[in-house]
Image (cartoon, rainbow, N blue to C red; front, side):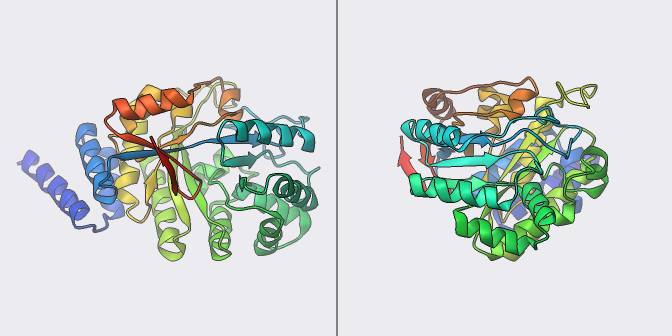
Length: 359
């Protein structure tokens, strides 16, 4: 009788996927806690092909420029911040962009710590200088915590900060700083960083100004299943309202060299569970991205059968995860081969998920 009941729940959810109907938070929690991983993967794969019937997996070529590692937030999960760190020079930024362009990059990811030495005028000058020297480069920069921090430092509204940044050359913003969108979790992990509501507010205002963004989740630390579902529900509701999110990118916390080093790193199965649930639950998100930076290429390849349709970025440079002792590196040919070996056709895209070249 128990097996019949389980089959009934699974059949109901599968029917919703086929009909493009929304699953509830209660169903999401059941899937996350109770559903067999292989079945969860099967459902996510159905959802992926229902939304993207073509056998294409996209990827991006960009560079992560971390402009400073000095940060007053001092989040317990971060191995990158320093009390007294560096501030990158404009000349070094230019050099990094030139190298990225030579390797086929179409954008830069511009993020850093919450550094009180850097006001809004510094970012305006940097962005204007980048656009003047490299008019075709797309600036994907400044996560919600950075924008909230600038708002507080400058005594300006979020909207005023974003308008000035956009006028200076900011194109889109990354979904970093979300961690888990549960205030209970945030108060334990990063009490000095923006709240759940502030993160969502930044995204809503950005979308209203035509600044699109990604959304992320860092899981595998102190969260509970209910927190994961709360996070997914929060961004799904905002996406209903704004349609401004381009993609969702979940990744796993890397404990080494952090204040939470005593926490055992979450399993690959846990990552796949979150990835699959994301694809099923986030019916209004077009794209779900694997995280080879934290999981490695082979495991990211498996993620393509658990709901993901995007392989992420070639990422010419990455420093934050590297500081936590994880340094997976992939060359372009390796990404292409991993996608092909999984039975898909690789396609280079830009930040807005417009396909530039099919291989």
